[in-house]
Amino acid sequence: MAFFNSEVPLVCRKQPVANVPVSPNAWRVQWNLGYTVLWSSFYTRHDLACLSWGVLTVSIFAVAQFLPLSWITQAMITSVLTGLGSFGMACLAWRYINVEQLAWILYTWLTLMLIGTIVTDLSVWYGWGVILMKLCPLWLGLCGIGYLITGLGMRSRLILICGAIHLLAIGLLPFVGPWQILLTGIVISGCVIALAELQWDSNGVCNYQSLY
Image (tube, rainbow, N blue to C red; front, side):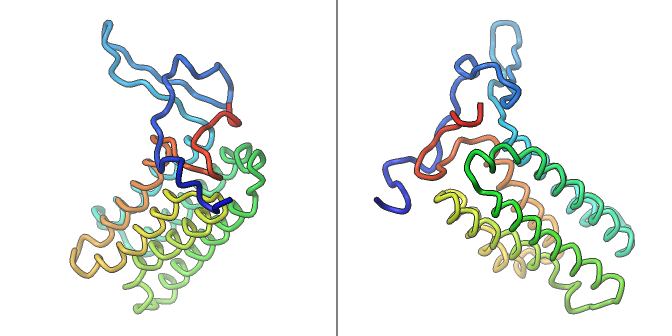
Protein backbone atom coordinates (compact mmCIF):
# COMPACT_ATOMS: atom_id res chain seq x y z
CA MET A 1 0.00 0.00 0.00
CA ALA A 2 1.36 3.43 -0.96
CA PHE A 3 2.32 5.86 1.80
CA PHE A 4 0.07 8.52 0.21
CA ASN A 5 -3.26 7.49 -1.26
CA SER A 6 -3.26 9.08 -4.72
CA GLU A 7 -6.92 8.12 -5.18
CA VAL A 8 -7.92 10.53 -2.42
CA PRO A 9 -8.08 14.20 -3.45
CA LEU A 10 -5.89 16.75 -1.73
CA VAL A 11 -8.98 18.73 -0.77
CA CYS A 12 -12.60 17.68 -0.39
CA ARG A 13 -15.65 19.86 -0.04
CA LYS A 14 -17.05 19.82 3.45
CA GLN A 15 -20.35 18.06 3.82
CA PRO A 16 -23.50 20.19 3.96
CA VAL A 17 -24.30 21.33 7.48
CA ALA A 18 -27.57 19.41 7.34
CA ASN A 19 -25.59 16.16 7.04
CA VAL A 20 -23.41 16.88 10.07
CA PRO A 21 -24.77 15.29 13.26
CA VAL A 22 -25.32 17.50 16.27
CA SER A 23 -22.24 17.00 18.41
CA PRO A 24 -20.14 19.00 20.89
CA ASN A 25 -17.18 18.19 18.63
CA ALA A 26 -18.64 19.86 15.53
CA TRP A 27 -19.73 23.51 15.54
CA ARG A 28 -22.28 24.04 12.79
CA VAL A 29 -22.60 27.50 11.21
CA GLN A 30 -25.25 28.67 8.77
CA TRP A 31 -26.03 32.32 8.04
CA ASN A 32 -29.19 33.07 6.10
CA LEU A 33 -30.61 36.23 4.59
CA GLY A 34 -34.23 35.34 4.16
CA TYR A 35 -34.20 32.15 2.09
CA THR A 36 -30.69 32.79 0.79
CA VAL A 37 -27.82 30.93 2.47
CA LEU A 38 -24.91 33.34 2.86
CA TRP A 39 -22.53 30.94 4.59
CA SER A 40 -22.83 27.31 5.59
CA SER A 41 -20.05 25.23 7.08
CA PHE A 42 -19.01 23.26 10.14
CA TYR A 43 -15.91 23.30 12.29
CA THR A 44 -14.42 20.49 14.35
CA ARG A 45 -12.29 21.24 17.39
CA HIS A 46 -9.26 20.82 15.14
CA ASP A 47 -10.69 23.42 12.75
CA LEU A 48 -11.27 25.82 15.62
CA ALA A 49 -7.67 25.33 16.75
CA CYS A 50 -6.50 26.29 13.26
CA LEU A 51 -8.81 29.31 13.10
CA SER A 52 -7.68 30.51 16.53
CA TRP A 53 -4.04 30.17 15.58
CA GLY A 54 -4.67 31.98 12.30
CA VAL A 55 -6.33 34.94 14.04
CA LEU A 56 -3.55 35.16 16.63
CA THR A 57 -0.84 34.94 13.98
CA VAL A 58 -2.25 37.68 11.79
CA SER A 59 -2.68 39.84 14.91
CA ILE A 60 0.94 39.33 15.96
CA PHE A 61 2.40 40.20 12.57
CA ALA A 62 -0.05 43.06 11.94
CA VAL A 63 1.02 44.67 15.22
CA ALA A 64 4.69 44.24 14.29
CA GLN A 65 4.14 45.63 10.78
CA PHE A 66 1.88 48.60 11.42
CA LEU A 67 2.20 49.75 15.04
CA PRO A 68 5.22 51.83 16.14
CA LEU A 69 5.98 49.77 19.22
CA SER A 70 9.40 49.05 20.69
CA TRP A 71 11.05 45.68 20.09
CA ILE A 72 10.66 44.82 23.78
CA THR A 73 6.94 45.61 23.79
CA GLN A 74 6.43 43.58 20.62
CA ALA A 75 8.37 40.67 22.10
CA MET A 76 6.17 40.70 25.20
CA ILE A 77 2.97 40.80 23.14
CA THR A 78 4.24 38.06 20.83
CA SER A 79 5.27 35.82 23.72
CA VAL A 80 1.90 36.15 25.46
CA LEU A 81 -0.12 35.57 22.29
CA THR A 82 2.07 32.64 21.22
CA GLY A 83 1.66 31.08 24.65
CA LEU A 84 -2.10 31.53 24.56
CA GLY A 85 -2.26 30.18 21.02
CA SER A 86 -0.19 27.12 21.87
CA PHE A 87 -2.31 26.37 24.94
CA GLY A 88 -5.54 26.84 22.99
CA MET A 89 -4.27 24.68 20.15
CA ALA A 90 -3.39 21.89 22.57
CA CYS A 91 -6.82 22.02 24.26
CA LEU A 92 -8.86 22.16 21.07
CA ALA A 93 -6.83 19.58 19.14
CA TRP A 94 -6.52 17.09 21.99
CA ARG A 95 -9.46 14.94 20.87
CA TYR A 96 -8.17 14.85 17.30
CA ILE A 97 -4.67 13.76 18.23
CA ASN A 98 -6.06 11.10 20.57
CA VAL A 99 -8.32 9.70 17.86
CA GLU A 100 -5.46 9.63 15.35
CA GLN A 101 -2.77 8.73 17.95
CA LEU A 102 -0.66 11.71 16.91
CA ALA A 103 0.21 13.31 20.23
CA TRP A 104 3.86 13.48 19.17
CA ILE A 105 2.90 15.95 16.42
CA LEU A 106 1.36 18.28 18.99
CA TYR A 107 4.50 18.05 21.12
CA THR A 108 6.60 18.81 18.03
CA TRP A 109 4.63 21.98 17.33
CA LEU A 110 4.79 23.09 20.96
CA THR A 111 8.55 22.56 20.92
CA LEU A 112 8.97 24.55 17.70
CA MET A 113 6.87 27.43 19.06
CA LEU A 114 8.87 27.42 22.29
CA ILE A 115 12.15 27.53 20.36
CA GLY A 116 10.89 30.41 18.23
CA THR A 117 9.68 32.37 21.25
CA ILE A 118 12.91 31.88 23.20
CA VAL A 119 15.14 32.84 20.26
CA THR A 120 12.99 35.89 19.49
CA ASP A 121 12.94 37.11 23.09
CA LEU A 122 16.67 36.58 23.62
CA SER A 123 17.52 38.39 20.40
CA VAL A 124 15.42 41.36 21.53
CA TRP A 125 16.68 41.51 25.12
CA TYR A 126 20.34 41.12 24.17
CA GLY A 127 20.21 43.08 20.92
CA TRP A 128 21.31 40.27 18.61
CA GLY A 129 20.97 42.31 15.43
CA VAL A 130 21.78 39.46 13.05
CA ILE A 131 18.95 37.35 14.44
CA LEU A 132 16.54 40.28 14.67
CA MET A 133 16.95 40.78 10.93
CA LYS A 134 16.12 37.11 10.36
CA LEU A 135 13.02 36.69 12.52
CA CYS A 136 10.71 36.30 9.51
CA PRO A 137 12.80 33.49 7.98
CA LEU A 138 13.08 31.95 11.46
CA TRP A 139 9.32 31.69 11.97
CA LEU A 140 8.62 30.64 8.40
CA GLY A 141 11.30 27.98 8.73
CA LEU A 142 10.00 26.67 12.05
CA CYS A 143 6.43 26.50 10.73
CA GLY A 144 7.63 24.93 7.49
CA ILE A 145 9.46 22.21 9.43
CA GLY A 146 6.36 21.66 11.55
CA TYR A 147 4.17 21.21 8.49
CA LEU A 148 6.60 18.82 6.84
CA ILE A 149 6.76 16.67 9.97
CA THR A 150 2.98 16.82 10.35
CA GLY A 151 2.42 15.98 6.69
CA LEU A 152 4.56 12.87 6.97
CA GLY A 153 2.98 11.85 10.28
CA MET A 154 -0.54 12.27 8.94
CA ARG A 155 0.29 11.12 5.41
CA SER A 156 -1.19 14.35 4.07
CA ARG A 157 0.03 15.77 0.79
CA LEU A 158 -1.77 19.06 1.38
CA ILE A 159 0.03 19.65 4.68
CA LEU A 160 3.35 18.88 2.99
CA ILE A 161 2.45 21.51 0.39
CA CYS A 162 1.80 23.99 3.22
CA GLY A 163 5.30 23.24 4.52
CA ALA A 164 6.76 23.84 1.08
CA ILE A 165 4.89 27.14 0.78
CA HIS A 166 6.45 28.35 4.03
CA LEU A 167 9.94 27.42 2.93
CA LEU A 168 9.47 28.95 -0.52
CA ALA A 169 8.18 32.15 1.09
CA ILE A 170 11.58 32.57 2.75
CA GLY A 171 13.07 33.05 -0.69
CA LEU A 172 10.49 35.73 -1.50
CA LEU A 173 11.25 37.87 1.55
CA PRO A 174 14.13 39.84 -0.04
CA PHE A 175 11.81 40.93 -2.86
CA VAL A 176 9.11 42.51 -0.67
CA GLY A 177 11.38 44.93 1.18
CA PRO A 178 9.71 46.49 4.21
CA TRP A 179 6.67 44.21 3.91
CA GLN A 180 8.47 41.04 5.02
CA ILE A 181 6.58 40.92 8.31
CA LEU A 182 3.22 41.25 6.57
CA LEU A 183 4.08 38.53 4.04
CA THR A 184 5.16 36.22 6.84
CA GLY A 185 1.89 36.77 8.68
CA ILE A 186 -0.17 36.20 5.54
CA VAL A 187 1.58 32.91 4.75
CA ILE A 188 1.42 31.52 8.29
CA SER A 189 -2.16 32.58 9.01
CA GLY A 190 -3.39 31.83 5.49
CA CYS A 191 -2.33 28.19 5.63
CA VAL A 192 -3.96 27.40 8.98
CA ILE A 193 -7.18 29.21 8.03
CA ALA A 194 -7.29 27.28 4.74
CA LEU A 195 -6.88 24.02 6.66
CA ALA A 196 -9.82 25.02 8.87
CA GLU A 197 -12.08 25.95 5.98
CA LEU A 198 -11.30 22.96 3.77
CA GLN A 199 -11.51 19.21 4.22
CA TRP A 200 -8.18 17.65 3.35
CA ASP A 201 -6.44 14.31 3.00
CA SER A 202 -5.21 12.70 6.19
CA ASN A 203 -3.93 9.16 6.70
CA GLY A 204 -5.07 8.22 3.23
CA VAL A 205 -8.66 9.43 3.65
CA CYS A 206 -10.57 12.68 3.31
CA ASN A 207 -13.26 12.80 5.99
CA TYR A 208 -14.04 13.87 9.54
CA GLN A 209 -16.26 10.99 10.60
CA SER A 210 -14.14 10.07 13.63
CA LEU A 211 -14.31 13.62 14.97
CA TYR A 212 -18.07 14.10 15.17
